[in-house]
Image 1: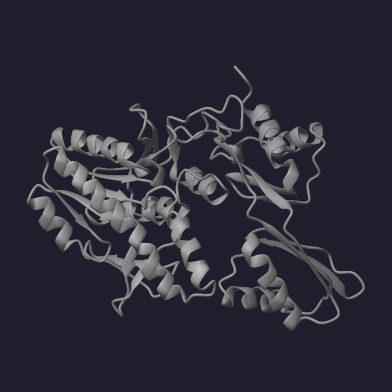
Image 2: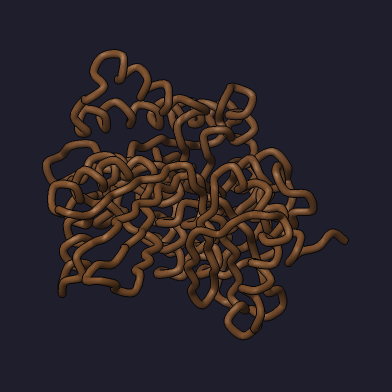
Length: 400
């Protein structure tokens, strides 16, 4: 009937019982007449366990050697799943990332896919094999193994779907789809039937852990239709696709992100080009800057405040202290970013004030604000994050 790419995360293949459950899902899809390519992550906490083993030997190991180690997790998963599918009586073959044609750049631990040479995948599909591919990995021009970073298996699956023009890419997780907030933390969180690429990309970037943001970006670029659904409960999930009925629901999701550090540069000399020098220095060290706030100049000085990931906070301070004199640099890691996302937001006045009202009513102070056409983010104290998400969600998506 068509070509279906299915991706299963680590929790979906965490033990023998779940591996057999995934094998049944895959073979049921195959029995419907579809060609099937399956992308699999490492089992359960395997990646974390491997990192822990590496740290016992050498906490400062070269990233090339870490990639050599971490790719072993997916190799275990694809072999076990292939064995399970074989046990059910279906033709199957497992392939590592490089065998499936994944060519990447040479940035170990955060590699980017340069291209996929799908010859082997096409040949195996032509033989009517179910193909099980190791996600999260590829090979660079030096024939070294590389990994794509956390959530890289999502990106692997979408890349295969794009390269082979698959009819659908299904991302199986331990939740039943994309919700308006984390259903484990927020009362009355609602599952969305569908969501636009732009909305999903914002949610993924702002802390929602359902999909990797790079995978959504790639799906949008190549018009790959995604479906997020549960590997444990066989019900329809959430479709991620082009914009449709954007004004039907104003707010599509509320997220929190505690992986945030707030860096403040106080009493900075107000000279031309200083902002360029600061942020180009950070960019050269691959430090991604999110929200930026600059004060009006006063007495020849100004303040610049911005956010980075928590891990990058100390490095950002170190770099800034090397290049700046006569100013104070402070890093606060006890903060969180809370955001609302909705493609219809721009055409609805009062959205921001409604969000701020919810925070005011809960006695939560806002430290920074950032807006775009489809999202509003605020920086608050980390200890207030869960209360903030619940209050904002209730304000926009009240209980039935």
